[in-house]
Length: 464
Image (cartoon, rainbow, N blue to C red; front, top):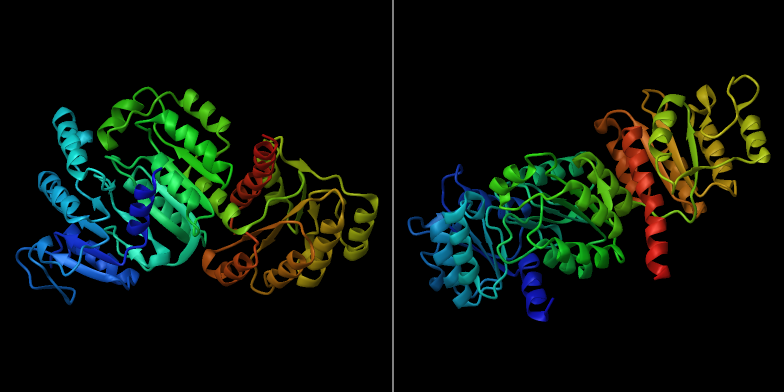
Protein backbone atom coordinates (compact mmCIF):
# COMPACT_ATOMS: atom_id res chain seq x y z
CA UNK A 1 0.00 0.00 0.00
CA UNK A 2 1.43 3.38 -0.96
CA UNK A 3 1.93 6.08 1.65
CA UNK A 4 -0.83 8.30 0.24
CA UNK A 5 -3.53 5.65 0.69
CA UNK A 6 -2.20 4.77 4.16
CA UNK A 7 -2.32 8.44 5.15
CA UNK A 8 -5.83 8.85 3.75
CA UNK A 9 -7.13 5.82 5.64
CA UNK A 10 -5.53 7.15 8.79
CA UNK A 11 -7.39 10.44 8.35
CA UNK A 12 -10.62 8.49 7.87
CA UNK A 13 -10.23 6.51 11.10
CA UNK A 14 -8.75 9.40 13.11
CA UNK A 15 -10.39 12.49 11.57
CA UNK A 16 -10.19 15.99 12.94
CA UNK A 17 -13.38 16.94 11.12
CA UNK A 18 -16.36 15.14 9.57
CA UNK A 19 -18.93 16.36 7.08
CA UNK A 20 -22.32 14.63 6.87
CA UNK A 21 -23.96 15.26 3.50
CA UNK A 22 -27.70 14.71 3.74
CA UNK A 23 -27.91 15.39 7.48
CA UNK A 24 -31.55 16.19 8.21
CA UNK A 25 -33.86 16.72 11.17
CA UNK A 26 -36.07 13.65 10.64
CA UNK A 27 -34.92 10.96 13.15
CA UNK A 28 -36.20 8.22 10.85
CA UNK A 29 -33.76 9.21 8.10
CA UNK A 30 -30.22 7.86 7.70
CA UNK A 31 -28.57 11.30 7.54
CA UNK A 32 -29.98 12.28 10.92
CA UNK A 33 -29.00 8.91 12.40
CA UNK A 34 -25.36 9.46 11.38
CA UNK A 35 -25.37 12.82 13.15
CA UNK A 36 -26.91 11.14 16.19
CA UNK A 37 -24.14 8.51 16.07
CA UNK A 38 -21.42 11.17 16.04
CA UNK A 39 -22.95 12.99 19.00
CA UNK A 40 -23.85 9.88 21.02
CA UNK A 41 -20.41 8.38 20.42
CA UNK A 42 -18.74 11.51 21.80
CA UNK A 43 -16.76 12.60 18.74
CA UNK A 44 -14.80 15.66 19.82
CA UNK A 45 -13.67 16.85 16.40
CA UNK A 46 -15.52 19.30 14.21
CA UNK A 47 -18.87 18.19 12.75
CA UNK A 48 -20.34 19.80 9.63
CA UNK A 49 -23.91 18.79 8.70
CA UNK A 50 -24.82 19.66 5.10
CA UNK A 51 -28.40 20.00 3.86
CA UNK A 52 -30.22 22.37 1.53
CA UNK A 53 -33.29 22.91 3.72
CA UNK A 54 -32.30 23.09 7.41
CA UNK A 55 -30.56 25.62 9.64
CA UNK A 56 -29.59 23.33 12.52
CA UNK A 57 -29.33 19.60 13.18
CA UNK A 58 -28.82 18.50 16.79
CA UNK A 59 -27.71 22.09 17.58
CA UNK A 60 -25.03 22.07 14.87
CA UNK A 61 -25.29 24.82 12.24
CA UNK A 62 -26.08 23.41 8.80
CA UNK A 63 -24.22 24.34 5.63
CA UNK A 64 -25.99 24.41 2.28
CA UNK A 65 -23.09 23.01 0.23
CA UNK A 66 -19.66 21.49 0.79
CA UNK A 67 -18.12 24.56 -0.85
CA UNK A 68 -19.32 26.66 2.11
CA UNK A 69 -17.35 24.70 4.72
CA UNK A 70 -14.67 26.65 6.64
CA UNK A 71 -12.15 23.84 5.99
CA UNK A 72 -11.69 20.69 3.94
CA UNK A 73 -12.97 17.85 6.17
CA UNK A 74 -10.85 14.75 6.71
CA UNK A 75 -13.88 12.48 6.32
CA UNK A 76 -17.17 12.89 4.49
CA UNK A 77 -20.24 10.71 4.99
CA UNK A 78 -22.59 10.67 2.02
CA UNK A 79 -26.21 9.95 2.96
CA UNK A 80 -27.79 10.52 -0.45
CA UNK A 81 -29.33 8.23 -3.05
CA UNK A 82 -27.09 6.21 -5.33
CA UNK A 83 -27.13 8.62 -8.29
CA UNK A 84 -26.63 11.80 -6.27
CA UNK A 85 -23.83 10.10 -4.34
CA UNK A 86 -21.75 9.71 -7.52
CA UNK A 87 -21.95 13.43 -8.32
CA UNK A 88 -21.18 14.39 -4.74
CA UNK A 89 -18.16 12.06 -4.49
CA UNK A 90 -16.59 13.80 -7.49
CA UNK A 91 -16.96 17.14 -5.69
CA UNK A 92 -15.41 15.71 -2.54
CA UNK A 93 -12.46 14.40 -4.54
CA UNK A 94 -11.88 17.78 -6.18
CA UNK A 95 -12.16 19.52 -2.80
CA UNK A 96 -9.34 17.33 -1.43
CA UNK A 97 -11.28 15.32 1.18
CA UNK A 98 -9.12 12.46 2.49
CA UNK A 99 -11.81 9.78 2.27
CA UNK A 100 -15.55 9.15 2.23
CA UNK A 101 -18.21 6.73 3.38
CA UNK A 102 -20.99 6.15 0.83
CA UNK A 103 -24.01 4.62 2.54
CA UNK A 104 -26.45 4.14 -0.34
CA UNK A 105 -27.19 0.81 -1.95
CA UNK A 106 -28.29 0.29 -5.53
CA UNK A 107 -24.92 -0.46 -7.09
CA UNK A 108 -23.24 -3.73 -8.15
CA UNK A 109 -25.68 -5.82 -6.12
CA UNK A 110 -28.45 -4.67 -8.47
CA UNK A 111 -27.19 -6.15 -11.74
CA UNK A 112 -25.78 -4.62 -14.92
CA UNK A 113 -27.11 -1.09 -14.41
CA UNK A 114 -25.90 -1.09 -10.83
CA UNK A 115 -22.45 -2.29 -11.88
CA UNK A 116 -22.27 0.55 -14.39
CA UNK A 117 -23.19 3.05 -11.67
CA UNK A 118 -20.61 1.58 -9.29
CA UNK A 119 -17.92 1.94 -11.95
CA UNK A 120 -18.90 5.59 -12.31
CA UNK A 121 -18.57 5.95 -8.55
CA UNK A 122 -15.08 4.44 -8.69
CA UNK A 123 -14.05 6.87 -11.44
CA UNK A 124 -15.58 9.81 -9.56
CA UNK A 125 -13.59 8.93 -6.41
CA UNK A 126 -10.23 8.78 -8.16
CA UNK A 127 -7.52 8.38 -5.50
CA UNK A 128 -9.96 9.11 -2.65
CA UNK A 129 -10.73 5.92 -0.65
CA UNK A 130 -14.40 5.00 -0.36
CA UNK A 131 -15.84 2.75 2.35
CA UNK A 132 -18.92 1.30 0.67
CA UNK A 133 -21.19 1.81 -1.10
CA UNK A 134 -24.05 -0.24 0.33
CA UNK A 135 -22.64 -0.04 3.83
CA UNK A 136 -23.62 0.79 7.41
CA UNK A 137 -20.44 2.88 7.75
CA UNK A 138 -17.52 2.61 10.14
CA UNK A 139 -16.56 3.04 13.80
CA UNK A 140 -13.19 3.99 15.30
CA UNK A 141 -13.47 3.96 19.08
CA UNK A 142 -10.10 5.51 19.89
CA UNK A 143 -11.19 8.67 18.09
CA UNK A 144 -14.78 8.40 19.43
CA UNK A 145 -15.95 8.17 15.84
CA UNK A 146 -19.20 6.48 14.84
CA UNK A 147 -20.40 7.20 11.30
CA UNK A 148 -22.81 4.32 11.06
CA UNK A 149 -26.53 5.02 11.28
CA UNK A 150 -26.73 3.02 14.52
CA UNK A 151 -26.03 5.41 17.43
CA UNK A 152 -24.28 3.86 20.43
CA UNK A 153 -21.87 4.66 23.26
CA UNK A 154 -18.29 3.68 22.47
CA UNK A 155 -15.74 1.81 24.58
CA UNK A 156 -12.12 1.51 23.47
CA UNK A 157 -10.71 -1.94 22.76
CA UNK A 158 -8.02 -3.67 20.68
CA UNK A 159 -10.02 -5.86 18.26
CA UNK A 160 -10.96 -4.57 14.81
CA UNK A 161 -13.81 -6.12 12.83
CA UNK A 162 -14.41 -6.06 9.07
CA UNK A 163 -17.83 -7.21 7.89
CA UNK A 164 -19.18 -7.55 4.39
CA UNK A 165 -22.70 -7.69 5.79
CA UNK A 166 -24.23 -4.92 7.84
CA UNK A 167 -26.58 -7.32 9.61
CA UNK A 168 -23.82 -9.76 10.53
CA UNK A 169 -21.66 -6.82 11.51
CA UNK A 170 -24.35 -5.68 13.93
CA UNK A 171 -24.61 -9.22 15.28
CA UNK A 172 -20.84 -9.18 15.87
CA UNK A 173 -21.15 -5.87 17.73
CA UNK A 174 -23.99 -7.21 19.88
CA UNK A 175 -22.16 -10.44 20.66
CA UNK A 176 -18.99 -8.52 21.51
CA UNK A 177 -20.98 -6.38 23.92
CA UNK A 178 -22.57 -9.46 25.53
CA UNK A 179 -19.16 -11.11 25.89
CA UNK A 180 -17.56 -8.04 27.46
CA UNK A 181 -15.31 -7.37 24.46
CA UNK A 182 -14.66 -3.76 23.42
CA UNK A 183 -13.35 -3.17 19.92
CA UNK A 184 -11.04 -0.70 18.21
CA UNK A 185 -12.56 -0.43 14.75
CA UNK A 186 -15.63 -1.75 12.98
CA UNK A 187 -16.00 -1.41 9.22
CA UNK A 188 -18.93 -2.36 7.04
CA UNK A 189 -16.97 -2.88 3.83
CA UNK A 190 -20.08 -3.09 1.63
CA UNK A 191 -19.48 -3.37 -2.11
CA UNK A 192 -15.81 -2.30 -1.86
CA UNK A 193 -15.74 0.14 -4.77
CA UNK A 194 -12.03 0.94 -4.34
CA UNK A 195 -11.12 -0.26 -0.83
CA UNK A 196 -10.89 -4.04 -0.67
CA UNK A 197 -10.50 -6.37 2.31
CA UNK A 198 -6.78 -6.67 1.62
CA UNK A 199 -6.35 -2.86 1.77
CA UNK A 200 -8.03 -2.62 5.16
CA UNK A 201 -6.13 -5.65 6.44
CA UNK A 202 -2.84 -4.04 5.55
CA UNK A 203 -3.87 -0.84 7.29
CA UNK A 204 -4.95 -2.71 10.42
CA UNK A 205 -1.69 -4.68 10.46
CA UNK A 206 0.04 -1.35 11.11
CA UNK A 207 -2.60 0.20 13.36
CA UNK A 208 -1.31 0.61 16.92
CA UNK A 209 -4.78 0.20 18.39
CA UNK A 210 -5.46 -3.14 16.67
CA UNK A 211 -4.14 -6.32 18.31
CA UNK A 212 -6.63 -8.77 16.73
CA UNK A 213 -8.63 -8.72 13.49
CA UNK A 214 -12.01 -10.40 13.01
CA UNK A 215 -13.52 -10.73 9.54
CA UNK A 216 -16.89 -11.74 8.13
CA UNK A 217 -16.75 -12.22 4.38
CA UNK A 218 -19.08 -13.61 1.76
CA UNK A 219 -16.50 -13.44 -1.03
CA UNK A 220 -13.85 -11.21 -2.56
CA UNK A 221 -13.30 -9.45 -5.85
CA UNK A 222 -9.64 -10.39 -5.59
CA UNK A 223 -9.37 -13.62 -3.54
CA UNK A 224 -5.67 -14.16 -4.29
CA UNK A 225 -4.78 -10.71 -2.94
CA UNK A 226 -6.96 -11.38 0.12
CA UNK A 227 -5.26 -14.70 0.90
CA UNK A 228 -1.79 -13.23 0.38
CA UNK A 229 -2.59 -10.32 2.69
CA UNK A 230 -4.11 -12.63 5.32
CA UNK A 231 -0.89 -14.60 5.36
CA UNK A 232 1.12 -11.42 5.90
CA UNK A 233 -1.15 -10.04 8.61
CA UNK A 234 -1.60 -13.31 10.51
CA UNK A 235 2.17 -13.59 10.85
CA UNK A 236 2.00 -10.41 12.96
CA UNK A 237 -1.46 -10.43 14.54
CA UNK A 238 -4.16 -13.07 15.08
CA UNK A 239 -6.86 -13.02 12.40
CA UNK A 240 -10.20 -14.82 12.77
CA UNK A 241 -12.47 -15.30 9.74
CA UNK A 242 -16.10 -16.29 9.51
CA UNK A 243 -16.89 -17.10 5.88
CA UNK A 244 -20.50 -16.89 4.75
CA UNK A 245 -21.97 -18.15 1.51
CA UNK A 246 -22.08 -21.95 1.39
CA UNK A 247 -24.18 -24.43 -0.51
CA UNK A 248 -25.53 -24.78 -4.02
CA UNK A 249 -27.09 -21.33 -4.41
CA UNK A 250 -24.55 -19.29 -2.41
CA UNK A 251 -23.38 -17.23 -5.39
CA UNK A 252 -26.93 -16.25 -6.38
CA UNK A 253 -27.63 -14.95 -2.87
CA UNK A 254 -24.33 -13.16 -2.24
CA UNK A 255 -24.24 -11.49 -5.66
CA UNK A 256 -27.53 -9.75 -4.90
CA UNK A 257 -26.32 -8.75 -1.43
CA UNK A 258 -22.91 -7.12 -1.89
CA UNK A 259 -22.10 -7.97 -5.51
CA UNK A 260 -19.57 -10.70 -4.67
CA UNK A 261 -19.43 -14.37 -5.60
CA UNK A 262 -19.12 -16.70 -2.63
CA UNK A 263 -16.93 -19.25 -4.43
CA UNK A 264 -16.22 -22.88 -3.57
CA UNK A 265 -16.38 -23.50 0.19
CA UNK A 266 -13.77 -26.24 0.00
CA UNK A 267 -11.31 -24.08 -1.93
CA UNK A 268 -11.86 -21.13 0.41
CA UNK A 269 -11.37 -23.19 3.56
CA UNK A 270 -8.18 -24.78 2.26
CA UNK A 271 -6.72 -21.41 1.28
CA UNK A 272 -7.70 -19.80 4.57
CA UNK A 273 -6.12 -22.57 6.63
CA UNK A 274 -2.87 -22.23 4.70
CA UNK A 275 -2.84 -18.49 5.37
CA UNK A 276 -2.57 -19.02 9.14
CA UNK A 277 -5.93 -17.55 10.14
CA UNK A 278 -8.41 -19.06 12.58
CA UNK A 279 -11.71 -20.11 11.04
CA UNK A 280 -14.97 -19.52 12.91
CA UNK A 281 -18.26 -21.27 12.15
CA UNK A 282 -20.55 -18.65 13.72
CA UNK A 283 -20.66 -15.12 15.06
CA UNK A 284 -20.39 -16.54 18.57
CA UNK A 285 -17.21 -18.45 17.67
CA UNK A 286 -15.73 -15.41 15.95
CA UNK A 287 -16.19 -13.23 19.03
CA UNK A 288 -15.10 -16.00 21.45
CA UNK A 289 -11.83 -16.45 19.56
CA UNK A 290 -11.19 -12.73 19.19
CA UNK A 291 -11.77 -12.26 22.91
CA UNK A 292 -9.23 -14.94 23.79
CA UNK A 293 -6.61 -13.22 21.61
CA UNK A 294 -7.57 -9.77 22.87
CA UNK A 295 -7.35 -10.59 26.56
CA UNK A 296 -5.25 -13.72 27.03
CA UNK A 297 -1.74 -14.96 26.34
CA UNK A 298 -0.41 -17.78 24.18
CA UNK A 299 0.51 -20.93 26.18
CA UNK A 300 4.11 -22.13 25.96
CA UNK A 301 3.04 -25.74 25.45
CA UNK A 302 0.00 -27.91 24.63
CA UNK A 303 -0.77 -29.24 28.13
CA UNK A 304 -4.20 -28.29 29.45
CA UNK A 305 -5.35 -28.48 33.03
CA UNK A 306 -9.11 -28.31 33.62
CA UNK A 307 -10.48 -27.64 37.10
CA UNK A 308 -14.12 -27.44 38.14
CA UNK A 309 -16.50 -28.17 41.00
CA UNK A 310 -19.03 -29.67 38.59
CA UNK A 311 -17.91 -32.29 36.08
CA UNK A 312 -20.37 -31.79 33.21
CA UNK A 313 -18.96 -28.50 31.82
CA UNK A 314 -15.43 -29.91 31.86
CA UNK A 315 -16.58 -32.85 29.72
CA UNK A 316 -18.23 -30.50 27.22
CA UNK A 317 -15.12 -28.31 27.11
CA UNK A 318 -12.80 -31.26 26.53
CA UNK A 319 -15.05 -32.58 23.76
CA UNK A 320 -14.25 -29.37 21.87
CA UNK A 321 -10.60 -29.08 22.84
CA UNK A 322 -9.67 -32.63 21.91
CA UNK A 323 -10.69 -32.07 18.29
CA UNK A 324 -7.42 -30.20 17.74
CA UNK A 325 -3.98 -31.78 17.73
CA UNK A 326 -2.61 -28.60 19.32
CA UNK A 327 -4.52 -29.44 22.52
CA UNK A 328 -3.46 -32.13 25.00
CA UNK A 329 -5.02 -33.01 28.34
CA UNK A 330 -2.08 -32.93 30.74
CA UNK A 331 -1.28 -36.07 32.72
CA UNK A 332 -0.98 -34.86 36.30
CA UNK A 333 1.88 -36.14 38.42
CA UNK A 334 1.33 -38.37 41.44
CA UNK A 335 2.46 -35.48 43.65
CA UNK A 336 -0.17 -33.18 42.13
CA UNK A 337 -2.92 -35.75 42.65
CA UNK A 338 -1.74 -36.38 46.21
CA UNK A 339 -1.76 -32.64 47.00
CA UNK A 340 -5.28 -32.29 45.59
CA UNK A 341 -6.43 -35.20 47.75
CA UNK A 342 -4.93 -33.52 50.82
CA UNK A 343 -6.83 -30.29 50.10
CA UNK A 344 -10.16 -32.02 49.51
CA UNK A 345 -9.85 -34.48 52.38
CA UNK A 346 -11.44 -37.92 52.69
CA UNK A 347 -15.04 -36.70 52.80
CA UNK A 348 -15.16 -35.63 49.13
CA UNK A 349 -15.87 -38.69 46.94
CA UNK A 350 -14.07 -37.89 43.65
CA UNK A 351 -11.62 -39.64 41.33
CA UNK A 352 -8.34 -37.76 41.22
CA UNK A 353 -7.49 -37.06 37.57
CA UNK A 354 -7.52 -34.35 34.93
CA UNK A 355 -10.08 -32.79 34.49
CA UNK A 356 -10.02 -32.17 38.22
CA UNK A 357 -13.48 -32.28 39.79
CA UNK A 358 -13.34 -30.74 43.25
CA UNK A 359 -17.07 -31.26 43.77
CA UNK A 360 -18.34 -29.85 47.10
CA UNK A 361 -14.75 -29.43 48.27
CA UNK A 362 -14.18 -26.61 45.76
CA UNK A 363 -17.27 -24.48 46.33
CA UNK A 364 -15.41 -22.01 48.54
CA UNK A 365 -12.72 -19.60 47.38
CA UNK A 366 -9.83 -20.91 49.51
CA UNK A 367 -9.89 -24.56 48.39
CA UNK A 368 -10.62 -23.45 44.80
CA UNK A 369 -7.52 -21.26 44.88
CA UNK A 370 -5.35 -23.94 46.44
CA UNK A 371 -6.38 -26.70 44.03
CA UNK A 372 -5.93 -24.42 41.01
CA UNK A 373 -2.49 -23.50 42.35
CA UNK A 374 -1.50 -27.16 42.63
CA UNK A 375 -2.65 -27.83 39.07
CA UNK A 376 -0.73 -24.84 37.70
CA UNK A 377 2.40 -25.92 39.56
CA UNK A 378 2.45 -29.23 37.67
CA UNK A 379 5.15 -29.21 34.95
CA UNK A 380 2.83 -30.93 32.47
CA UNK A 381 0.28 -28.10 32.66
CA UNK A 382 0.83 -25.14 30.31
CA UNK A 383 -2.57 -23.46 30.77
CA UNK A 384 -5.64 -23.74 32.98
CA UNK A 385 -9.35 -23.74 32.26
CA UNK A 386 -11.11 -22.91 35.53
CA UNK A 387 -14.88 -23.51 35.73
CA UNK A 388 -17.19 -22.17 38.44
CA UNK A 389 -20.98 -21.86 38.70
CA UNK A 390 -22.91 -18.85 39.94
CA UNK A 391 -24.38 -19.18 43.45
CA UNK A 392 -26.00 -16.82 45.91
CA UNK A 393 -23.69 -17.74 48.79
CA UNK A 394 -20.48 -18.74 47.01
CA UNK A 395 -18.67 -15.82 45.37
CA UNK A 396 -16.83 -16.23 42.10
CA UNK A 397 -13.12 -17.01 42.74
CA UNK A 398 -12.07 -13.87 40.91
CA UNK A 399 -9.34 -12.69 43.26
CA UNK A 400 -8.01 -16.23 43.56
CA UNK A 401 -7.54 -16.50 39.80
CA UNK A 402 -5.98 -13.04 39.58
CA UNK A 403 -3.49 -14.00 42.30
CA UNK A 404 -2.55 -17.15 40.38
CA UNK A 405 -2.30 -15.28 37.07
CA UNK A 406 0.15 -12.88 38.71
CA UNK A 407 2.29 -15.69 40.11
CA UNK A 408 2.39 -18.17 37.22
CA UNK A 409 3.48 -17.53 33.64
CA UNK A 410 0.73 -19.86 32.45
CA UNK A 411 -2.46 -18.52 30.81
CA UNK A 412 -5.76 -18.96 32.64
CA UNK A 413 -9.16 -19.02 30.95
CA UNK A 414 -12.20 -18.73 33.22
CA UNK A 415 -15.70 -20.08 32.67
CA UNK A 416 -18.11 -18.52 35.14
CA UNK A 417 -21.40 -20.25 34.38
CA UNK A 418 -24.34 -17.99 35.13
CA UNK A 419 -26.05 -14.80 34.05
CA UNK A 420 -24.07 -12.01 32.41
CA UNK A 421 -25.69 -9.49 34.73
CA UNK A 422 -24.41 -11.28 37.84
CA UNK A 423 -20.89 -12.02 36.63
CA UNK A 424 -20.17 -8.82 34.67
CA UNK A 425 -18.22 -6.98 37.43
CA UNK A 426 -16.01 -10.06 37.91
CA UNK A 427 -15.56 -10.52 34.16
CA UNK A 428 -14.48 -6.91 33.73
CA UNK A 429 -11.86 -7.24 36.45
CA UNK A 430 -10.59 -10.57 35.10
CA UNK A 431 -10.29 -9.15 31.57
CA UNK A 432 -8.28 -6.24 32.94
CA UNK A 433 -5.85 -8.78 34.44
CA UNK A 434 -5.49 -10.86 31.26
CA UNK A 435 -7.95 -13.69 32.01
CA UNK A 436 -10.54 -14.26 29.24
CA UNK A 437 -13.83 -15.08 30.95
CA UNK A 438 -16.85 -16.80 29.42
CA UNK A 439 -20.37 -17.78 30.52
CA UNK A 440 -20.55 -21.12 28.70
CA UNK A 441 -18.07 -24.02 28.57
CA UNK A 442 -18.32 -24.21 24.78
CA UNK A 443 -17.23 -20.57 24.43
CA UNK A 444 -14.40 -21.00 26.92
CA UNK A 445 -13.13 -24.11 25.12
CA UNK A 446 -13.25 -22.37 21.74
CA UNK A 447 -11.32 -19.42 23.18
CA UNK A 448 -8.66 -21.61 24.80
CA UNK A 449 -8.39 -23.79 21.68
CA UNK A 450 -7.65 -20.72 19.55
CA UNK A 451 -4.83 -19.68 21.90
CA UNK A 452 -3.27 -23.14 21.71
CA UNK A 453 -3.56 -23.24 17.92
CA UNK A 454 -1.99 -19.78 17.69
CA UNK A 455 1.10 -21.18 19.43
CA UNK A 456 1.68 -23.48 16.46
CA UNK A 457 0.93 -20.74 13.93
CA UNK A 458 3.47 -18.41 15.51
CA UNK A 459 6.02 -21.23 15.62
CA UNK A 460 5.46 -21.96 11.93
CA UNK A 461 5.91 -18.33 10.90
CA UNK A 462 9.03 -17.98 13.08
CA UNK A 463 10.61 -21.02 11.43
CA UNK A 464 10.17 -19.64 7.90
